[in-house]
Amino acid sequence: MSEGMRARRLATEDRARALDFLCHDPEQNLVLIDFVRQLGSDRGPGELPAQIHACFEDDRIVGVVLLRPCIALSAGIPDHALETLMPYLMRVPSGLMKSERGPVERTWKCIESLGRRSSIDRVEIAYRLRPERIVPADASLPGVARPARAEDLDDLVYAARASLWEEDRPDPAEGDPAGFRRWVEGRLSRARIVSDAGRTVFVAYADVRRREGWLIQGVYTWPDVRRRGYARRGMDSMVREAFASGASHVQLAVVEGNEAATSLYRELGFEEFAVLRTILFF
Image 1 (tube, rainbow, N blue to C red):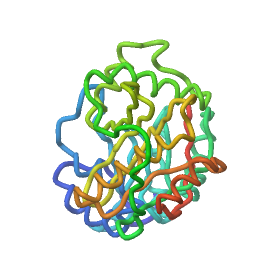
Image 2 (spheres, rainbow, N blue to C red; image 1 turned 30 degrees about the horizontal axis):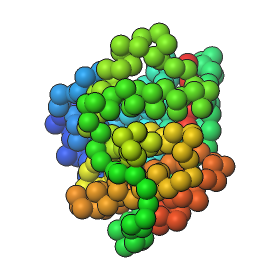
Image 3 (tube, rainbow, N blue to C red; image 1 turned 180 degrees about the horizontal axis):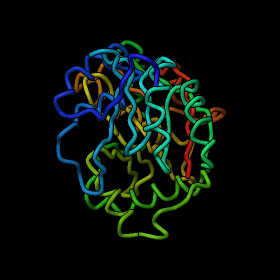
């Protein structure tokens, strides 16, 4: 630990101070802001309570890390703060780490030295859309966009599994189908779909919905109807919903090299703002 530095787990009474620190860069700290705001609140079915630690220099926060349910590092975290927090990061036995590429590389080098291995290790490009860049809606786009309902659960479960299959990721539903279904059901309020002739053809999740921004994840279009405009319809609906709610921006991440997704988001007005590294390890 660096001299003069200390680290500890954040509690409910730390919420305001941590948010003040994170909101200096709300776009890059959006996930952390969402979890810090939920400190002390009840979690939904199947959701783990957040485990968040901070590095302090005297009484001043200089770095924040989320350890559970995934690993996220505060934007621009200085090396001395990361060094102080590293013992906590190295205790995480497995999980998903996703943040700015530089700090993730330094963290992964330490975690990997313990014998951990990655099943996914990739670079992703983070994109954002601000209200002034939104493009006019295209009335000719196919399908009907709407929030998901309970009767859509089977389709949501399928989409969640199919997206894992396409990435060659382990499918938790094989070992615990009931538990996986409960996990998807716990995200129902965040899900948005596009249907056509009664069939679900597109799914995405507004996993963070706050004034500081919306984070969209879990985007999936059924393979046999891709490139027909359904994803554009779904994304257009979601970004308009976000801005109508008062969000400052909408963000998402695209795997480096996914030109189809990159082209779609750029046509919708999204712009690149960060380079991330995502590692799933065990």
